[in-house]
Length: 287
Image (cartoon, rainbow, N blue to C red; front, side, top):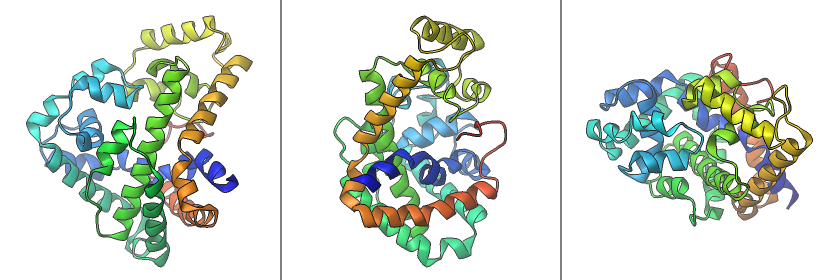
């Protein structure tokens, strides 16, 4: 169906903003360190992985995919000795509540638009399938919150992890490992800036340069680090496969409701960005 396909392809710029802004919100680190975690990367790894239980670093690295496993191992499994997954999940929802309240305001969060968006997004998750999607399955096992803005956030989180698991399947099928996926995606000009990607994902300059050299040998990157025709074809195949694997929720929701949800979430995402949800010099202008 046309609208489902279009929304699936625009997920990052419309719905995902409302989820991912919490990774940059100071409320997240405050709540999770309050639960016992150490500040910094531990709050990200443990916060996102907690719905899967007290898993080891290999599981986190495999499901997060483009992070340096050495970075993950510095924080997992130590995080589980400082706070239980259940406590971390509770703190994460508290952080989301605080961050969305600051960025969007109580009036917006209490609006009919947010309530309607929450209902539609939750309905869309009825089309998600857990088969082969460990991060989605972990989050899908959590209880639903009661407040509409938290329902909306949780539903978008489910849709995001469902899509992310499908994207990893596409990367594996095309022989693209985590670092190669990251390097080639920055070359599209639609994601992290290279320096931000290296810093946040824990890759050294040497590791990054080695991966880029390999991609040049494979004909994916040119000598200037841009995508070649073959590289663009690869990224296009990955997006097509990811969109196809992620269409279920939107097909389940139906074209009219999918279009309405997009209309409701677009202004909320823009409001969050305009309120300073994301730091400067992290994402390219094509984000």
